[in-house]
Image 1: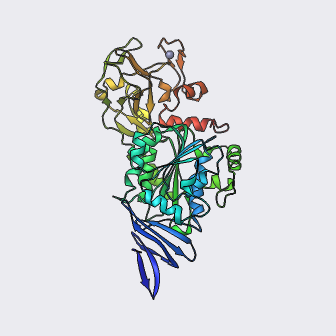
Image 2 (image 1 turned 90 degrees about the vertical axis):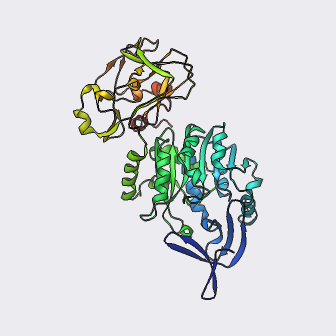
Image 3 (image 1 turned 90 degrees about the horizontal axis):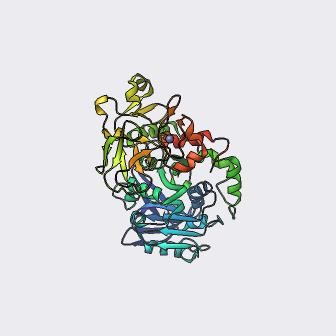
Length: 472
Ligand SMILES: [Zn+2]
């Protein structure tokens, strides 16, 4: 055993942490081997049972692992009406699979773990009652999680990421990257949910959590940290839960209750009464961090970006418009608006002509160009009631379908705007609404049509407006 130390003639396992370390007395040494990817160590502790360490970081203890595994699996699963296909990245110790299989709707699980030897070792030594590699619904893929996602063509209902610490240069670091969450977002169906091991959120050790949260919030409109306490981890632990189309905190009580009941086997930690409480004990310092983080880490551009294959000219709809020079594929980024984040108070003082080009980010701030000299072709894009573009995140205009040369590029202004009064529409489309109203986003048929192509704030508003009757 590599990390064994002797104190007062007794053997202990020493888990090194940034502020010292944790000691676990060893009643039995079960396994120790360095694979191609990591050091695997398993010990028996008189209190915690069998403890698994990967690269000297505790992963699970057999006597209290259910606390972590029920928390990372069930809140995510009950946020989906009927999860059928689930992707697990990491989680080679198999406990997550055991929890997922308690949901009878599940038809297929893909488990992606880089280390075949570690999966086999856990199956052999950790659990007797459950064998991951013998689970008929589970396909185990020995590959790097990020690599898997970058090649993946399947769509999942739920993704669970269970990886060891986010420390710099750790093998798990790339899987916590912004690129990874972008790919995960794209690999999820419209009602998709993701649950991520969210690290320690205690006051002095919260940098890992902030880093993961910042990367998740870039792509997912609804992100929550949920806290739990697992004695063997000796930390204030968290799971980051994010949904594509609804706020998990606002899941109706009826649905939560019904969906928890569909879990076939009894749970030992998670319950209906606990679900809503999971969101309510976030420390104030963390709330402040998240807010700050959101504004800084959304990486909003300083200047407009315009795809080189589009150009501006006089529009057949109104004023100037933006047109395709060549064929443009669905999903292509057309424009990304840049500018400055400004508080509402300052926004009110801007000339009306400039205010038109601003997007509301949240209840306190607007974003966009602040001077007339900054108006360029990126601002030419017109409204249409039958748009060929939509909005991603806050400021990105992307093609909703393939666009032909010389077609005018348009999006539906209700995807970004909360204008006063109404705007007359001259788009001339068959389905033209003639006038656009600020509350149009509440109309169900528009939400359906534009799916996730509302900017994030509008997505939040949609959820708030359907508070009493959630649509998920
Ligand atoms: Zn119209």
